Length: 267
Image 1 (tube, rainbow, N blue to C red):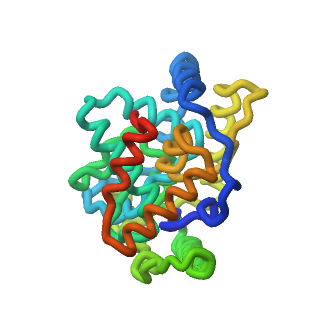
Image 2 (spheres, rainbow, N blue to C red):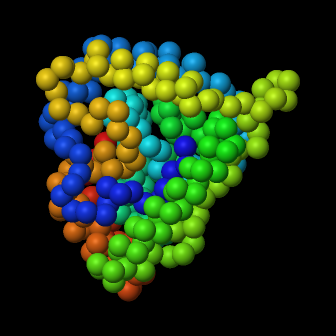
């Protein structure tokens, strides 16, 4: 899908999705391992048409967006990476979450020298990109641009923060390499994507306890899901404002390291 740099989630303090604490997240990671959720997700992913990736990195201009079970699946995968690589990823994920509204050069934290660190576990949103019917993609891009402008105006009016025009207007075309072996353009209709979404929700419902409160069916940035393990919604929003202001006024980003240390943020 067309993914905005900004989210309506960021526009209002205290309106966030209720997510698990660090301790309950560990329990959930154990649960999805026991229920073989990764294998079930892998099966759904095989149903999405694929085409060779030329590793240009252009479509990874935003942090990947995930359903909650997909987020946990990726988190489980990342936790098994070498410690040094996890430390680098933490800095990139946290930096993205707090400064993506200001820095046009921030790409998906999982993109490393145009290689996707989580390519085998990338979520449906990543797999759908490039497969939208052209008219639908154009409409999504227009909606994205409109939402970006509205959110930029919100930050300007309420906090005196100027979101750079390049960030507000940035978007990309669909991949021109989305063709099958016969050279035919690949596309997934709305109904085909809905079928895959329903398959995903069926897996989620089987994996999670029925009584568990969760953001069922909702999609968010991986970076947002991740940082919510360490910060409450109001606290997250206030820190974002402070870091954004420091960057705009002083060009500094060293506050990211301080947040990681202070809140013991890690994979």
